Amino acid sequence: MQLQTISYFKLKELNIKRVFLPVGTIEAHGPAPLGTDNFIPFKLSEELASDFSAVVLPIVSYGINKTIDYYRGSMGISEKAFKLLIYDILSSCYKNGFEEIFIFNGHSGNTNALKEVSFKAHKKFNLKIAIIDWWEIAKEIDYFKESKGHAGIDELSMLIYAYPKALNEIKGIYKSYKPNSLIVYPNPRSILIDNNQIDYSVLDLEKAKEFFRMVKERIKHYINEVLEGWREI
Image (tube, rainbow, N blue to C red; front, top):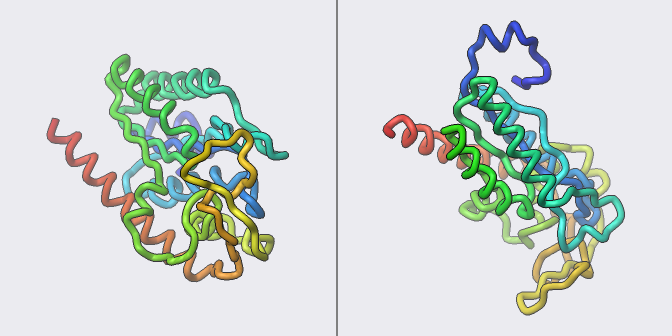
């Protein structure tokens, strides 16, 4: 259930205490849509919300872009603006009586800022907050042998489950660039994987569905662990 689709009266009646906040950015991902980092966390939060009696907040679709901000279409906001925005959203959660907030993050550039702001809001408002970087959880799942990482087969499989139309556009072989020894601004490629030729012909909707399901179930496991721990405090 999405917050923006229900009325004030309905929300009051439901007395919701738990919310899911998807956060991403607009950023180049090789041949994939610029909104890749938005599609994935929104779909995860949407599919998991009913399992936890949570309401899904509108997505924060602009994040902190760095090494590939140079690429056309990449649209982020400053770290300062991002922190202020997230803090104000968390403050508004407190004002509305929401007590438990799970942030579904789709973009690694947001992670440190989310940690800082979430701790600040936790101390100020006594909110319970958990940040979910889905790709870190996906690393626990040995499913793909192909290239993994930013615009890798794993991320784009999550994408094409969340946004199947993308599969029709992601074709061919592309170069990637992520050497261990260099940090480059702007990065020479918008596919941030150890220097490879990435063959996107291996992308498959059925495999994508299964991988998404596995990641979702793993996230569900961690949310249950967190909630159990919070109940015992």
